[in-house]
Image: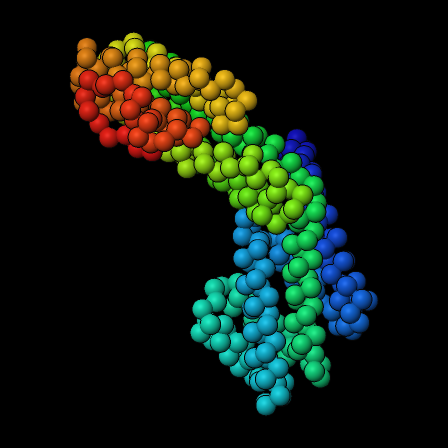
Length: 363
């Protein structure tokens, strides 16, 4: 019973998260039918609501491109289906031939999977529900549905910037906790603790993926909607930060792996290394404010640089290979963080203190 309640709560949460998209699809489908059927006078207007639904169900960030592909696919299906039916009629064999011919034409035109599938589906409907001279009408219906789907997407209000901030905050909190766990493991010489930090680091890609999806949706919304176009300048810093936040996540995994390897070999690391990783965690936790300018960037940069300075200085006392790898990753993450707030790569590298051992910095 407890498990059932948990499943039910999860389903209700998922429904709440999908409420706005659900309303968008419902409104777009009804509006598409009304325009095609009542305004334009098309008697069989099923292509319009289908087209609007497909546009809104496409992964955010690709809807404009996918809408074009969908309408093109439907046009190919209608054209090929109508032409073949006129010559050979309808039936099971004819439908098979029509689908094959339609997919072949779509492929020859350079269409991807969506164009081919929409072409095939449209051809089947043309063959299964024949109607004299309906091809132009059905194409218009598909165009109406696609455009209305994009229009609904453009006018439904959403706070894209808040969604971006939430996504970056979730990612930053997770990464800061991982680095703090790792620093504690280094202080204690705790192999299990370092393994746990590495396990958590390996489980973070979904947070980066979420950030990417929210960013795609925000950029798309700014491009589609005149109402949201003013937010494009606010979205831009997040777009610039995205690849460097991803680099920081990757480098954190390498850092955790290198620290665990050193501890497994019973190679003691200087206390300064743990201090540097703690400082890095503090900087990561404040990254969202530094990206959107809400935090004092000068102080934040000093905090990020402190981690690199402490780590680099420790190399002079213990220039072992494992130690050098760890310091290199601390420096790499520092560069990633600076790049995430818009610092040029050459400037970010120039700000780093001279290391006891040279290395390549990503970013």
